[in-house]
Image 1 (cartoon, rainbow, N blue to C red):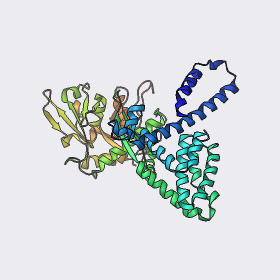
Image 2: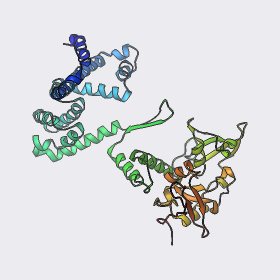
Image 3: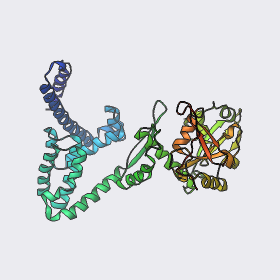
Image 4: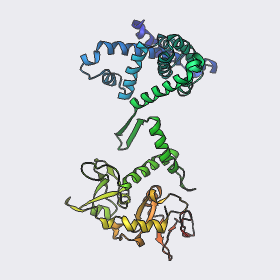
Length: 418
């Protein structure tokens, strides 16, 4: 009974105070299994309560715009998590009662219930209630062996077991239903964390996921034996490279009447002394190193201000390596010029060897192609690596002494054109 939940809470709280370190391993495992079953049973109770409150309109009565918003405040959830609870509560209430019973008995988890509910709904539409009941028994049995991800994969062929005569047609219907669910659920969220970092979260449909993987996988491989980035960092940098390429094409739609571009605002004195930070047009701040690196890129529009805040320069073309000059740079370097890198020209920025803020000219003799990773690397380690043009007019890099005590110049042999 719901009225007994406070007593159950007291009993669970007492368990939390138990000296579990003294228990034998077998009892610990059994206790873990029991605690997990209880958690799923309580989840079934919670969903039933949410469904009843949603049906009564409690959220709007108390001033919230929806039950999901009310749950966010009441239970301190994120909106997506609250919406998932409301949706699942509705589905369990109106769908096959056997799923709700299996969850309440602790035989399946909440995520498995979501998979089974989706599958049962599809089976009932395709083959009727009798096949749906049979499918429920099969799926609950599978849930005792497989996690939600694998269970969803297996569920796409459930009709092979319960209604083989219509399996092929129903499988197509199931895939279509899954595609519709993915389309409804798709989203991308960009949010600012309290420490200044940014969080990117979202759910992609299958097609977009394939496009993203195709775009970033070739750029996510280590750029050489000295690449110390983690796989997650390499994927992050690959996404940055893809965005740079999209900006560089010039084919994105206008935004507010201007071409798509990144605007970085900084002071000239601070930039020239390598001390001034920059501000994006979104209000976010950049480090001085990032400002100087971005100012190299033709896809970036630098807005340089005087000490009084007056614009001195809004992306003058002579500071950007574009058009014939970039084409000449591509012909000379053939891609990222950093030793050991095989990134092609379209993934590369044009870097000023002597930064324009330090008086460097925008010319072929003062430019080198660098991929996003090595462009960042060079700016972060500008005091360690030195890039210069050799006597034959091709770039070479002098490594730091800790890497090569003799500091012999290195060249890129992947992209050299002979």
